Length: 474
Image 1 (cartoon, rainbow, N blue to C red):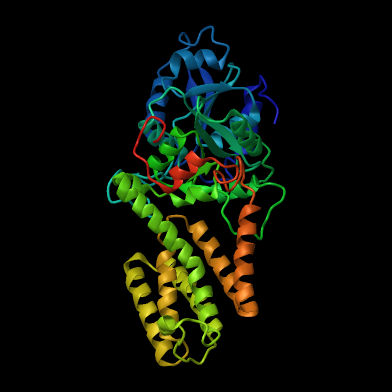
Image 2: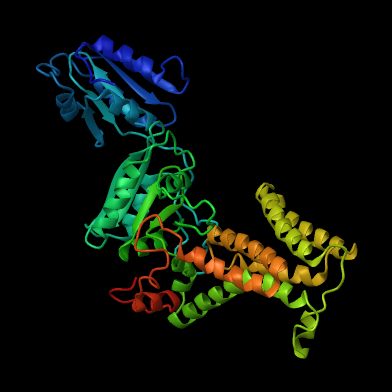
C-alpha cells in the first residue's frame, strides 16, 4: 500500500475497503465532527477499551474550531488533544492497516496529514496462573499467558536491569505475528543474537497460527532432518525458569498467542534440568537431577534389554531366572510390547480429549480394565504390563514432552532392531542412537552436545550437579 494522500475522503474509502467495514462484523468505525472538521475512527471490536475510547471521544467533541486553529499535521493534534500515552502517528498505509489488526485504534481527521494510532487495546485472555507442566512444591506459582505484553512484564518483574532488552519483531507475511527477543545486551552472544534475528526476518510463510512450533519449523536449517526425533528447542511456561536462562546469557523468544517461550540456544543436556530442583538445597537438587537422568535412561533401554535377555533360554545367570520366564500369552512377546506402547498413547490422547470432570476416573478405569482384561484373556503377560507401567511413569519424570516422545520412538525402533538381530541388533541400535544424537543440528548455537562437544568441563559439571547460587550461577 502507498502512503496516505492529502484527500480525507480518499483515505476514508481506502481504509473502509481494506479493513472490511460492512464486510467484517467485528470492525467498528464511527464518524465525528471535531472542531468543525470531519474525523473517523476504526477499531476491532473486542480489542478497544470502551472506557478509554468514550473518554477521548467526549473530549474531542468538546473542542471548538478555535482550538484547532493552525493545526496542519496529526502529530500536532496528538501532542495537544490525545491524552492516551501510547500514541504514534504514521503515514504508511500498510503499517496503519497492520496496526489496526493488532488492536490499535486508528484516527483520521480532515485537513491533518497523517493518521493517529492509539494503543488502547485489551486482548481477551486468561489470568496468570501456574502452568500445568513444570509444577513446583515451593517457589512461584505464576506462568506465562497467551499475550506477549504481560509475559514481558513477568520477566521485567524478576530482572530489573536496564540491560534487559525486549526486541519486537513481526513474522509471517499475512499473520504479522508479534515475536519478542528477550536478552541481556551485555551477556548475550552478539553473533548468536544476530543469527536468530536474521532467521526470524527471513521467515517466508504466510501464517504462524501454531505460534512457537510454527516459528521453530520455519527457522530450522535447510537440512531438515525430519527423521531425527530429538527436540531442537526447549520450551518453558515458567517465568522464573526463563528469567534464570536470560541471566545466564540465553535468549528467550516469545511468540504472541502462546504461553510457552523458546529458550535459545538449546542443547541435549539442557533437558536434564528442571525447576523443582532449584527450590531445594543443592544436595537434594543434585539427587533429584541424577535420579531423573538415570530413570530416563533406563526407560529407553529396559524393554529392548529385557526382550533380548528372555528371547533365548539360559542367557541369564541363575540369580536372574525370575526375569527369563515371562508367562505365556496369545501374542508373541514383541507384539505384546508394541501393543502396550501404542495403547499407552491411546489412553493419553483419550485423556486429553475427555472433560476434566471425567478425565482422572477415565484414565484410571481405562488402564485397569484394559490391563486386567488383557491378562485374563491371555493376550498379554503381567510382566509386560509391569515393565510398560514403569516406562510410562518414567516418561513424566522430566517436564519436556518433546524429549519424552523422542525417547519413546527410539525405544520402539531399538526394540524392533533387537528383535530382528538379537544382541547385535541391540548394540547396533544403541550405536545408531549415539550417531543420531551426535549428528543432530541445533537451530542456533555451538552444537547439540555442548558442553561435551566442544568440551567445557565446568559447564558439564553444572549440568549434573546442582551448585549453590553464586555470582555466576543463577
